[in-house]
Image (tube, rainbow, N blue to C red; front, top):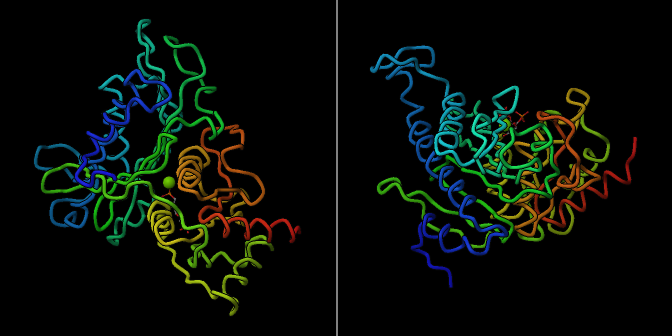
Length: 336
Ligand code: AHM
Ligand code: MG
């Protein structure tokens, strides 16, 4: 029986021995993400007060410039991981290039790189809708003690050591995997601790929710158009329910709990879709598979795609296994 009162800190320590490589480095890294998440959460929660306490571009009471929240989140996550000296490189959706850490120190032994989308769905902030942070962790492939190279970041998703997200919603949750299932922790804001609230999260094999920006319908590939029509057809347990928040983390989180499919297909406007393989799709795909779900670009398993550039985009279909397989079937049968 899972201990419902277990904090994330306790959980990390208790499960350290089940990690593939047990130097404690990965535990420290996840701990630093936990810490940065709490700081960002505090700031995100104040977003509605921005008109009162100052908007981005203003100067705050300490004389510091106010930052946009996505810039703030980016800085906080990077600072926390850099200062604690526990990674050798970071790539962020907010930065053009990857960041090399400690390249001057020949003795540094850090072996992990982190890829992060610090505040995904940030356009939702202005309207008080949930946003999230997504992270993905790999072991470097170049020798320890040397500066990281692009090769360390352009690894296939199936090489991920850990991945997760923070959802800043009605409550704030940190959900992550180290390849041994998915566990969710809810922040108690009064105490500032995350507690294990959702042990061993699983996508139901089937679901009744589909999440897609249907405003782009006319631009979608034929297979997706037909799959959407299938979702809307009056038959068996259909029509399904349509739910689209426009915040990947929140749409994924709901679908994992209730059973559903999320799609960001390619369109004529966005020939490779919108979402980023390294910062959004791979970590979500790892979580999905660890939770008995599936993630694909319509034809290929997301985690088997060999990345060619840091900010690469891919079409993304993710969620309950049977639903994703059905969508793939429509893609295969409707080649244009
Ligand atoms: P962002 O990284 O610029 O925030 O974009 C990613 C977000 C996802 O969270 C969300 O699912 C999607 O973009 C929504 O896009 P759209 O408004 O085109 O439907
Ligand atoms: Mg994003």
